[in-house]
Image (cartoon, helix red, strand yellow):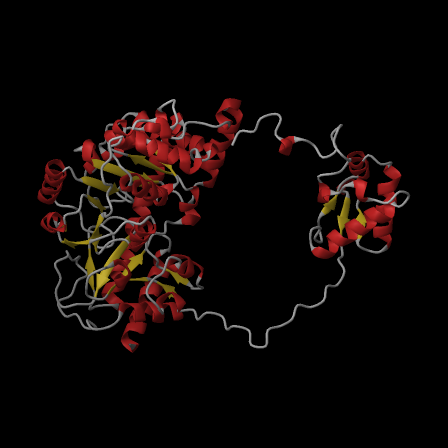
Length: 543
């Protein structure tokens, strides 16, 4: 928030006119020192700070001249205090490196509980139904090989290209670019996103229609907030009068949306985000053509979230006829489609299908990010709401965080406009194709009864242990499928105990479904993928 020049928080402790001189360092106030005993007082304060950890070993004390000026005492007061601490062996002077804390008094040992709680077992993420922190628990669980889905190759992050682009931004950006900006995001990145979507997803949009968000996770939060409010009301926040003074007749109300239908199987993480914001997530079945629109109609839902380009986790692509049925549902029922285009660019045997947003912008809220293309830690994504909802989404973003951090936006805009991102995408497609082929070959060898589902796309594949299925199979499928009655959470737990991370398919389902696993291949080299699948096969044979 902006502060006025008169904000007391901006006044220096030792500024002229303050009650007593002092220092920001340890909030020392020389007014607390007794007359004639200032060095003794300063020694006691510094020893106390070293003892209680405010000055840990390795920390640097202010220069004697600087601290004396802050406290408005003679430099000799501070020099004497530092000398006594040096004689005690607690600090040491290192020339231009300054005075450094090198030792702290021994503290009394903390009491040891009689029965310390045992550490959680390595299979803890699978011992109960998945809670809000289940992905955190799995992420931090130790394992030799990580076959978790949705994890890109973080070791391949283009550090050199990012550093070059960041240096260019810091060299060329005007000072105004570092101030509070448009809550929709930096104009340069919004223009770059529009150009990227036009080239790669067939979407035509104006930069003013784009919101830069902190990944798809924040996009879902904004969607939930906007849809649960009166999405068709007039935007009273844009008026110059207080909301309480706006006549009620000028603010037409309508019940908000309380549920968003989701694909089943479908992303557990997306469901968790929507439910956190108070939305129900009724399941709609997915078959070999994608989401079943007849079931969507029967659900009565006014909004649906789906992954049409590469469905998670089944990997199916929404078929042409099904796409037409879905768009017809949205147009005739005034329905809203939330299109999560999370890994549409990663296709290995055919061009990506056009985004639904390109066909019916009035009824499609489009979300994308660079989490799978670059790194999730960047927390950069984009949201294209339908035009009638744009103002409501801009306000939701404004009051969420005033907009994303500016510097990463300018850097990413540079990478997009320079063609660096396209070059990286071509590299990743080749690499991911090899890793996917390695995983399918390993499944054929070590899990010969498993059925592999989905198109040659994305960063993961799904396999099931069943006799028959409506989902498409790859050439690794087999008609003879044992282990149809196993628990996939037990299998995932046993694999983790053996050093391999996987997701049980049941995490991503709401209705009864055959057991299976969701395996990611983007972050591991082919040799590790082969070894990981081999371990899963060995574990399965022991169950």
